[in-house]
Length: 449
Image (tube, rainbow, N blue to C red; front, side, top):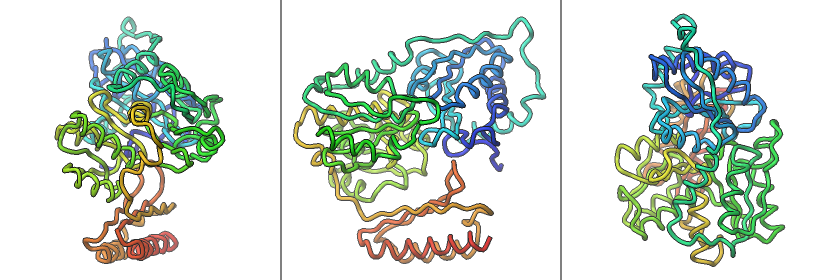
């Protein structure tokens, strides 16, 4: 069925516009209560990031759950992986994170986690969609069974402790000079606390949220401030989180950015050498660079690919016995510890290797030579251009140009009205030629509509 609410990562959109309204949150909480705890009497953990609309959406969730006899347990401002953790450790019927991740404050979103701390699959989301439409038509809890919300103190502390407990090597970061960018988001307290406990010489930016500055010129999608801070302070390394701290981008001492592929390659190699890597390789999405695949192949490891979205990565990991996976964008799952992307957890693995080995981050994070790759985002306002026959023909022609020397991935964003066109090949000129052919066709279709 056509989806009204859910995209590739929960529900997300401009606040106070469909689908991201207080009414949507209310419908979702009622529908989720009927789906996951039809008799009431259970708890649901709720966390949020720092954006202005977070408390409004949280209030709507609280109203819906309490009306159904479900006790909302408010965690406050916490990273998304902390919500997954608390759902798992408290026996809750559900975990809900109020966040639009790397988007600016004008947007918000809802991410749902099962009692096992994992994101729901498409079938569950489709069932929730159907139930949300009729949410106001069913029965509610009896007056005596209406629940009361409660606060849970210490969720952030428990989350930090779980992350620190993963360090199998040195826990002495005193020789590392680190800059951490918290994106004025959900990790603005947890990341500095963890790194200071390890003794790091720490500079912190993006740690003064005011409700509207989340991801504004800071964080994993705007690394200019972090690069400048690394160079200004002479730091060994910089790490950037996004608004809900489930994502990581690393900056080396020269100010160069190492994306999620390089970080995953580093972690995979370290886990393999220390006997901790499971599944004979790792999982990534179709967007990950060919260079990562070639690097793993040379190590005797495999790279399994999924469609875009860290929940699809997580599903494949659980189904096939992998314990490492993630996305080029920096969502990295270390499933022995966490069930979802975790920026702090992944960052600690990188920093631990640097602390143990010494040397320069620029050398350590050049795990493989990337194949030439380029991504073009095309915004559209009318019909989906990918449904056009002439666009389909042009994309097939672009694929034929690359043949077995490269690949092209074209998809509609699940969170914004964008067509994402990515091409890569070992021959850069060939890659650009195929990309231009595809982009020209999509642009022409959008212009015609």
